[in-house]
Image (cartoon, rainbow, N blue to C red):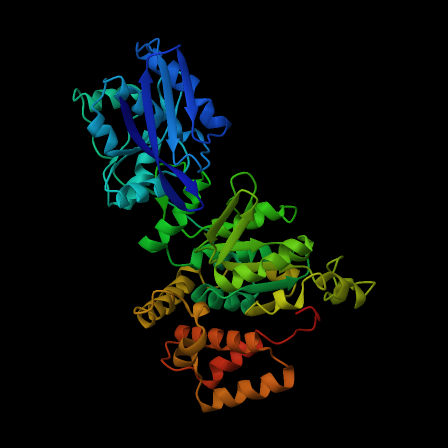
Length: 505
């Protein structure tokens, strides 16, 4: 007689249903596990055996065969422990088979029977909802999985609680969704002295999700500005929070008993590998660009990143998704992020500082910023030179505009975009505009069109650059509360696009 339990195997953000079949038959005592398991899954035999012994359940002196179907799908991870144990308990008639078959289970077992948190509870809950089954997961994953809301989530702390639930002695109470609270006092733009133009660029970038390139001498405040960007971004909507948290769940980053409404802010070091930034490695895991989905990716010391890594960003920036292709896996991850890049004007950093002039100008700057390819630079909507702040200004009290007031304008602009794109499933912010939608929503008035036409001809704007100027102008109009894009909006957008004195922009 064969008993069945169900779990999932992960392919990117997709969770595929796996049937765990267990047969107990006469023969030489053995515990066989088949169905293309990896090392962690194969070791589940010993963890399951020890966990059952901790509950005083001895395995019979028979041949136990567990098959993970479909057999051609690779099975990776320790979350197969719990479904294997459930299928075995059902095959031994210790728990009802019908109730086990109506459950999708995942969880790692300790040797004493405790359930240990695993990655991927959120996409597993999505798969369980599609199959109209209950999700059974460790207690530490319950608040995260319950966010799906379309299926019942049971979150026991141990295998003993699972047994008591299925035997009716102590039924489990469904888990409730949990939310992780952000920091009480985020970093405030009021603390930034000077740099008004850079602050304005940050506001525009946040309002329309436009990519921003900052260049300036060391210590001018580039990283300080970027660190305060999350404080003016609107919170994640419920669908966005679910999308982002599914990726973080697969990466094992949801460890606080719930999901967050704060937009992710990722800042990898410039020594990070291609797999770390783009995705890949064992199991084709999501990279930093996917972990920054619906949030911010801050790349400091931008020219110091390997050239191959930088150029690989070009396609994800345009498409909002990345295909991680490996010999044994082809996985697509979403990666619609706001890119903030920061760089010094040259290798020594003082090309534009008159007090500490670079000794190799202008070759030093040309060589250094020349590491960034033209096609990649063309994808930055906003380009800002961040000058050093005078020492006299540092002694002045902080009297700049607060993040709260900037965030209010950004939220109002985002609300206008939400209303504008309410009938479009693919458009969320102005940075997504293209084709007919760009002409319908971002076409400037006659004076604005004449201005951008003259600039495009004289400055040699590419077609991509022309369209990006229109998108930025649409965002500036939204911040201004204007229904139409007018000449002043176009002029400001062009000012952030034109080359600066550094030569690298």
